Structure formats: structure tokens, C-alpha cells
Amino acid sequence: MNQSAEPPLERGAHRVLLVDDEAKLRESLAEGLRQEQWEVVTAANGTEALQSVRAREFDLLVLDWMLPDVDGMEVLRRVRADSPQLPVLMITARGGHADQVVAFQNGATDYLMKPFAFEDLVARCRALLAPAVRANS
Image (cartoon, rainbow, N blue to C red):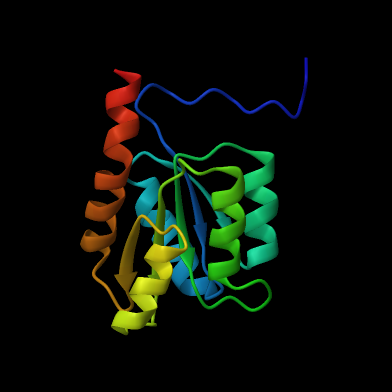
């Protein structure tokens, strides 16, 4: 048996990659998303995010823009090159209209400004995951 094979997800479960360099926020969000019965993998920087995306399949990427090594926008561009269908929710303190335009031009599916209510994050994640649910029905 191949030890590196991904375990199958339960029907209806989703695999989410959450990328944020703020440890407390990352862990708090991850715990909340796990309560939604989603499998959550976390990454603290762009390099970890890219390694995770290459190693596993995800249903959603929740991605901070301002990361300490490879910034979120560069992660987004690289992910789009390999996984054009993966929904990407940008979460960032960059709230200017021009920033949002840049994010969408580079392939973001949605954009949420920090600080945000956790309920807003969950609602947007559910909306982005809905097509995957319909496809698996």
C-alpha cells in the first residue's frame, strides 16, 4: 500500500488550503473551518502553500496576499498556471479598489478584506464550494 496516497474524503467533505502568516489567525480560522466538517490544511507562507498545492488536490484555496516569502499574488499566479479551476478566496488587509482589481485580474475567484467576520468567510467558502457539491451529486 502506498503510504503517500491521500485518504479518501467522506462524501460531502471538502479539502481547504488556508494560507496566512499570522499564526493565531491561521489556527483560529482553521479550527472554525474544521467545525464546518471540512478538512483544512494550513500553510504559513507562500513556499509552503505552493508545496501543498503540488502535493495534494484541494477544493478551495483561502490565500492571504501579504506573505513573508512568496507573496500571495505570486502564489495565485503560479496556482492558476497549474490549477485554473481551483477556487481562490483572497483574504487581505489590502482593501483598495485597485488591489481588488489586481487580484481578480490575476485569477482570484473572490476577495475578502481583513478584518472580517468569521461568518462572512464561511459564507464565501460555501458559495465557492457549491459548484463542487453539485458536480459530486
